[in-house]
Length: 119
Image (cartoon, rainbow, N blue to C red):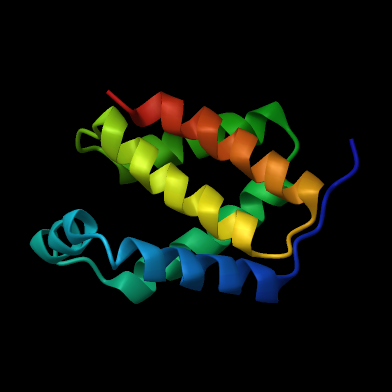
């Protein structure tokens, strides 16, 4: 399968826009404050993560991603919160002029990973 490229500027824009949306949601604002979250660090990780998701094709990488996601999200994630989070991510992607194949691939991979951590 051909690797699909996503420009770094697009990744940055996606992450910035996505966090702008999250930070308008009181639940996430409170959660980030309670956990003393460094939003810039979070954005940095998210950019690396999205780049990986788009470029990694191997099954081995997929399982590495699963364990990384589980490690970073050791706390309980309610299905409705995951749905809100994912909804905001999809909304952000829809608003951007992303390549449809890139968008679909990202949605599919994020959905797969979310299903591994939502309890």
